[in-house]
Image 1 (cartoon, rainbow, N blue to C red):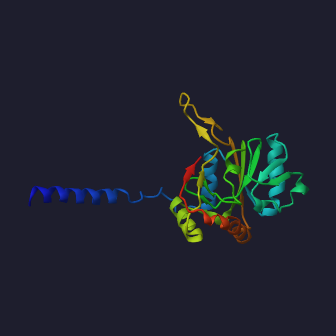
Image 2 (image 1 turned 45 degrees about the vertical axis):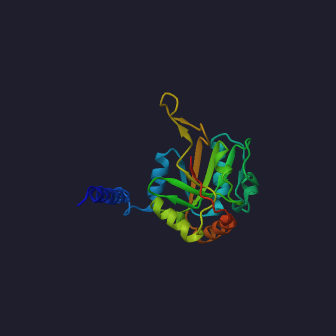
Image 3 (image 1 turned 180 degrees about the vertical axis):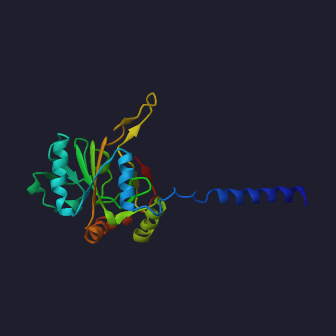
Length: 231
């Protein structure tokens, strides 16, 4: 074997070893056996999100009102259009269905999926699912249909490819409140985004919510550039 062949052979072996190294590492013990909803709630709380389970979407306005009162926040928020039709007036909450601005204190979103492995929300950008509504307000409220909770990030992206084909302009992965440890390695919440995240896991709205969710984001399929960001 010539020196050239020896070098090429080593390079091929190196590529093979690298390919093996990129295979997904084993999942945490018991992850696939765990109940996805319970696991998601546990992990989300570990990330400093607060979580409440709701039997139905009809209870959301009253739950939101109670949460805002408990944090001495005004009963006023901006939301994705899919939530505007709920009976907010009965709960005494003023709602505007529009993207958040810099002076909005509370933003309410849904999510495309939620990850049980890490307690993370996956949000897709689009005309009806503005990313700023989860990023600009100090308090981010999120609705998670139990049927949209998957086990891993790989499953979430498989769901994205299956339902949407092309990704939108941005896929935001929200893992609790914004945080940084830049200053003296001391964790500070809210440095680059919301410092409060409240999640409502809704039990029995899987079919209706999923269909609303799909319709609200369908128009975003025109965006084909891939831009993945995390908070």
